[in-house]
Image 1 (cartoon, rainbow, N blue to C red):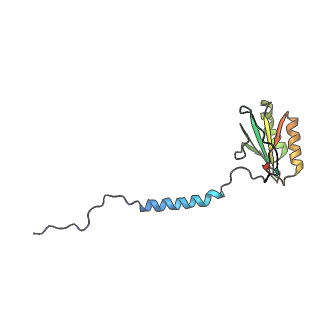
Image 2 (image 1 turned 180 degrees about the vertical axis):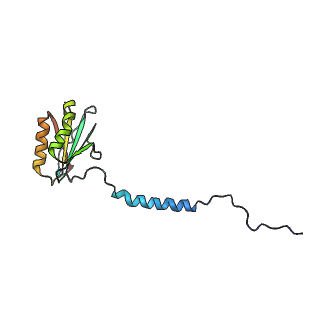
Image 3 (image 1 turned 45 degrees about the vertical axis):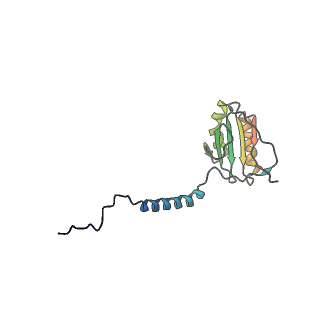
Length: 148
C-alpha cells in the first residue's frame, strides 16, 4: 500500500496583499484631499516694511480678520493666530455685540487687525473706531513682510 501524498499543505501565513492595497488607496485619497482642506481665513494682506510687535505672554490677544466682502472673523488667544476662528460676524454691529463682553472683562487686551488689501477702507476705519470706543488702547495692523 502506498501512502497518500498531500498535494497542498495547509498554509498558516496571513495574506497581507489586500491590506496593502487598501492602505495604498487610502494614501492616495488623503494625498488628493489634503491640499483642498483650507485652514484659517483667506486674507490677501498688503506688503509693508515694518517692525514686528512683541506681545507679553500673559496678555490676551484678539486677532480680527476682515475679508474683502465685509465678513469679520476673530480669534482670542495668547498670540496672533490666523488659523483658528473663535467666532465670526457678518456686520460691524454683530461683531460689536459679540466682542463687547470680552473687551469689558479684559481691559489690557491687545487687538490685531488683518484686513484684506481689497477690503473697503471704511470697514477697517469703522472697526478701529469701534475698538477705540470700547476702550482698546493697544491696537496693531497685521501685514505681510515686503519682498526684498
